[in-house]
Image (cartoon, each protein chain N blue to C red):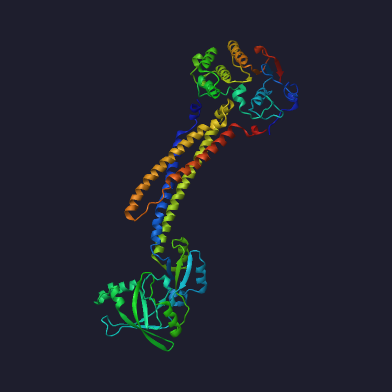
Amino acid sequence: MLLKLQKRTLVPSQMIGYALTIFVGITIILISTQFYYDTQPLLSQQTEAFKSKAAVISKNISVFKSLDKEKIYFTDEEIQDLEKQSFVKSVSKFNSAGFKINAFSNKTESAPIFYTDLFFESIPTKYLDVETDEWEWDSSLDFIPIIVPENYLNLYNFGFAESQGLPVISKNTISEIEFNIRVSGNGKSKDFSAKIVGFSNKINSILVPEEFLFWANTEFGSLGQNKTSRLLIDFNNPSDKGILAYFNDHNYSISKDKLELSKLSFFFKTALLFVLFIAIVIVVLSVSFIVLSLNLIIQRNKDLLLNLYAIGYDYNRISKFFQVSISLITAISIFCSILVSYYLRGFYLDTIGGLFDFEEQFNSIVLFGGSILVLLLITYNLLIVRNVKNTVIPSTALLS
Amino acid sequence: MPTYMSDAEIKASDIYLVESVVFEKGKKYLIKANSGHGKSSVLNFIYGSNANFSGKIEFQGSFPKNGFDRRKSKISYVFQDFKLFPDLTVFENIQLKNTLTDYKSIEEINSLIEKVQLGGKRDRLVQKLSLGQKQRVAIIRALCQPFDFLLLDEPFSHLDQENIAILTSIIEEELDKQGASLIMTSLVESKLFGFDKVLNL
């Protein structure tokens, strides 16, 4: 009887509208958060594909800076500021040679004869991406190990050698070739033998061991020193989005693929967050809508509720119908959301699994969906009882 | 803030501003007053649906102003405006109360409906009934619960003598059965029920 009486109070179109919107909203929330969890390791795997979390930065060179060369150097303040950033673990300077360097080949070698000016730089060994046991400088031997960018070899093999009809050289071959280095400065000059011991993918420079450069700089150094145009930065977390913002603000350029990737992952996360935000808006709106609609229903049927209360139905009993109906609708909608999310997840897992080597993550759909459901039900039930109570018992009757 | 009646309005009252009024169980009382003098208010105070009064009502030692459980087992009330549900049938309206108290059997309810000459309207929606018919439904509904006091708020205002006689006997029967009291309001003196006391409000 009570059911028959109260059934008429609900407006079917409102209930259906609510069920649909809450279904859509919750589904998007569930699937986007799960998608985030699922792709998280993929992103971090990719961004940390490089073992080291270091990158080389320099200042962007513009027309004005090419005239005023001082502007491409980092000042001490700038370096200190960098060191203070939360995402920076350590900052190392590139040491450059302050003396004149020439490289030339022995005339007896089979390799082409060359004579060229060179420059040297050095960085702390731990940042090198080259593993070689020859990366040692012994002051007693007149030998310098050298690391060049792998790009140089490619440039030679696929560009220069190709067009000039010269033979291509493999990494191993080039490592066999010894050539001579003449270091001069401070009125002194000395010849060394040298060999390319490795190729770096990371650092675009011609590197020699730090110890050698320190020694040579004190021995031959005459040109202006202590100017740093490039810094090597060790990051705490290379996918920190603060990195890009900071470098953009300071107009530094950064040579690292992984930061491109972190850019990508930043956009991806932003997009996902945006979708999540929209979904939350949908859910909040639909919840507010149904709360409002229930309040209206209760107000519109005030006489009915008052009469029920007058003949002995207490407010808990009167509320029960509204509580049960709204709880049931919400539960069914969220249950459907969970089912659909499961289906969609299976769908995208198949796709991702086919593209990447990918480990399945914890499935939070049921847990998360269930929590939302419980939260909503508690809210609705409390609000309904409070509303019905306030309707049937006018506040003045609550004295005593 | 509730607005109270002025002293002038209630000078001659047997209830308002009197030190105490006692309604004993098993007796029948008539509260008589002209329209607008607060007959319904007194009943609402007793029923607990209106708490805008100063003073104290005691019932078996205590009486919380909004005491709600009285409505199911201690006090039954025939409201002046019936408080019936127009979308339910005669039987459903009565049953709505009876399911709450589980006091009368379906047969008993059916026989009461027959007695007040509403047998043909048992499954008719209450909104289709006349005032007098609604009044009869409201009275039967009020009898579907255990009570110590039965409150009737001008219960026969829309009824003919024949129906009044029928209802009076049904009510008296129930009162005797339950050993309960009757408090009835009326605009005029009433010979019905053989009241033990008449209070002028």
